[in-house]
Length: 80
Image 1 (cartoon, rainbow, N blue to C red):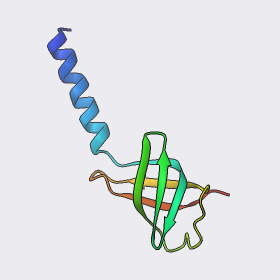
Image 2 (cartoon, rainbow, N blue to C red; image 1 turned 45 degrees about the vertical axis):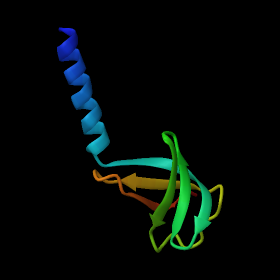
Image 3 (cartoon, rainbow, N blue to C red; image 1 turned 30 degrees about the vertical axis):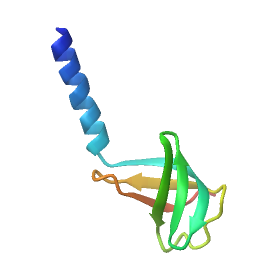
């Protein structure tokens, strides 16, 4: 392939990854009301809303988080 075709393919793949929904594990770094700050493998994310069932977040919890195509994060809960 040409360099231009390679660059276009790379750009499309990267855009699709950024727009797709995703889930990952994270660590809680701070808590504040209905939101927590987390750190994922990709870096820190502040002010992430949590499900009501995750009622006692604590710094250091390993949590399951999801992100929709628009980039909105939600903490689903802590792992046992």
